Image (cartoon, rainbow, N blue to C red):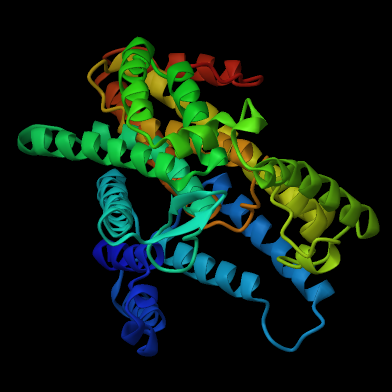
Length: 433
């Protein structure tokens, strides 16, 4: 079932039916996911993830559906809601199919390979066939396909993918260690290069923020700093002068065209617009994706808080706040379980903990990038929350199994340690690892 789910992830991210039109005419995506659903319903042994992230994801979904129901004036389905329900339908298949840490590893390695192939295809089309959009006086790399192919959206997708390279590195053991590590390094460099060629200042800032977070949350912070000091200047000096000027407008607006400064100011205006809409409909907003129809500019808000406040109102703000709280809480508890496990078993595999931490960092990036983009309805929120919930459940099971084994043999007092650590969790505070 995991292989079938990875097939759909490839379709959703790479979107071949948007690249080759004849596949779209065959309704490829719909046929595939329905086939997966039938196989899942009748032939697959189902599991269930007992984690608070599941409740949070369905809370966000409920807020979106309630807001749409109370604001809809059309008989046709809202395309934003339709896309979100597709994401949730696949998420249900996902959360009931991944049963252990091994399957989670396969899923995330497959996800990383799929996304890297998507990056490589996009970069190939840009470099050798000149596929781009000319905007802000520069040619800008775009993703293949149509959905989320815009330079800003494409760049943001890459930034949110960056944290998953650390768990990917943790899977690189045994005979395949060398080729997998070569792939990991090459994919990471490709991701950084693609970000620079998008000309997206938000994505460029997101890259820098990720480096700061990686340093703050890693024991290998000096290695990361050293690699960054080497790699980033090399990429910068090999960058076209027009791209350099594009990024320099972050500190010196005179480096770029006037519309670049207008674009930057539009992000702040998007927040203000969202708050104005919130004041008019504070409970459930104006409906998912509808803010552009009630603004002076007729454009999206380009701000996460403004988008949620204006389109979903208080129920949306509370739902997304709850989701962020749950992801943070899961990270804290994963630190707790990992500390217990590592103290009694120094050679324990850190993979589940690294996944949980990566998702927490990705959430921070979503919030930071949300200062300049409307990313409330991205698949990233849902899928990443599920990845973390699977990792935390796997880590808890591993820790409990080890404690049970020690208790049966009477080897140590791990249970007493666990109880004392649990008491200390009354007021947990995340710390860097």
